[in-house]
Amino acid sequence: MSKRKVKDDHMPVGECITQVQSILRERFCHQKLPEKPQAVEAQHKHLLELLKRTAIHGESNSVLIVGPRGTGKTMLLKCVLRELLGDKEVQKNMLEVHLNGLLQTDDKIALKEITRQLHLENTVGDKVFGSFAENLSFLLEALKKGNRSSSRPVLFVLDEFDLFALHKNQTLLYNLFDVSQSAQAPIAVVGVTCRLDVLELLEKRVKSRFSHRQIHLVSSLTFTQYLERVRTQFSLPGSFPDAKFAQEWNASVKTLCEDKSVEEVLQRHFNSSKDFRSMHMLLMLCLSRVSVAKPTVNPSDLLEASRLCLSDAKADMLHGLSILELCLIIAMKHLNDVYEGEPFNLQMVHNEFKKFLQRKSNSMYNFEQPVVMKAFEHLQQLELIRPVDASSAKTQREYQLMRLMLDHSQIMEALQKYPQCPTDVKQWAMSAFG
Image (cartoon, rainbow, N blue to C red; front, side):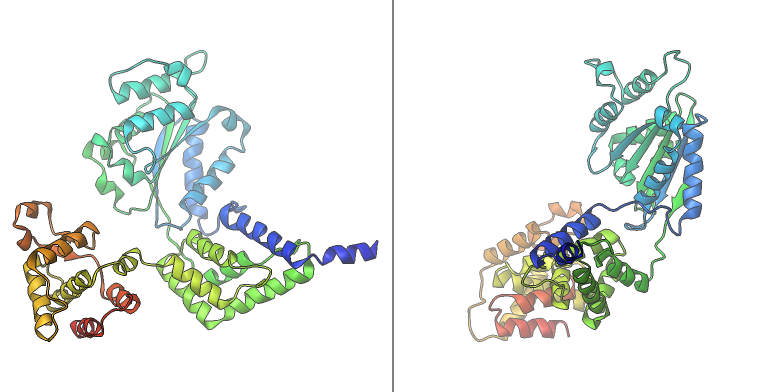
């Protein structure tokens, strides 16, 4: 029996790697809700009481959960709903409708989705109503119990709430807030958004019907906690079948997190986003590089994964430009430096380019005006430059004011990686940046 156990304890490396990838992928992709949300106890209590008043006492409410990405807005809402639905009566009675501003891009799509989630397709059938308000009130009427005296409470969760403000006349928001303010039916409207100025986006009539309750979340995460989270997320559990392999893996993860170059990379990620989802993306890319031949993660893997995560789409786009287009970009950056970010036009860029040409004896950079204009237009199509305002479209093309949508570091990085970039162009770029 003991011999058999010893044999089972040491799995082949290939099997161990498969298990590692399976466990960690599950962990990175399917985040489990914590038993109790940390550092947001007051917000948790506030939201729970609000939703209880709708679910149990039939009192309508509206509230916004506001905070940057990764601060735990969705996690807070899910924890509250888990606790709320722990009550059997609430679970049986309350209905949920989840809408997302990225998916329900207009009121018609939103109404279809509300109908689908409330399972009222058969009730609606082919009936066509006049306004959105009539449609919504019909749906809420259809939810009334058999005696038609009371409606079932409905929770509306609007993710990416700010995008619903882009809908025509903000009809969806107006009607939901209108119902939540009146005694038509017990509904709770919970908006989730990253925009701190979200109330400024609302029309006057919509704002007047909103309760103005806001729950703010801010990240109190320190870099030390972030580093510890990376270590725990990448470590294997004690229940791993091969204890020796798990021990070696966890020791290598600890060494990895103590490496100075790794710390610098993680500090950069922490500074750009404290969102655990972006951290999981980074760790997932590291995990994909693990194999039987290389059964642990090295600092070089993390550096490469970071490069992929933080790769700049605009800087990458510059690698495919022609020499002329690259020269125009350098001329624009020079103008930006000289005139401290003031807008420029094609004529100014062309003049700056001509100054560079005067220093050169060869004629390889001599381009006709139409060719330069074509290159300039191509940069606009790529959105590397954009007009200052729409009204300038009527202005003659050479004098249309533009802004450069790239910064110093993006241009310098592109020049370093540009295939066979002429030395004189690099030198001109360096001089342009002073």
